[in-house]
Image (cartoon, rainbow, N blue to C red):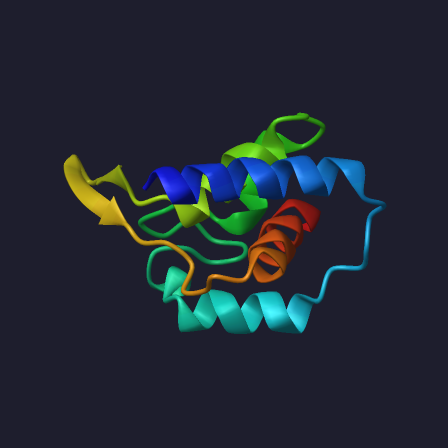
Length: 109
């Protein structure tokens, strides 16, 4: 878990220091589907979890957005769904660039 936390911090720091690259929406969508994120989330509609557009609006203009979302999608955690605590799964990748792409995609919505 410590390794994932360090990974998330490093990813957030590198994202802040590099110029913005275009988001690969198709790759982000493919990884989100592979990771089964769409079981609980959707792009526009709230399901068990918030819509990705709702998450983007929540973090719009906040400097900590990349770091917080990167941690949320890479570090196992618990979330409340209908009053019950459940595991929040992580993205099914070890590739920091793929994680960064998904987070930037969500924030771009």
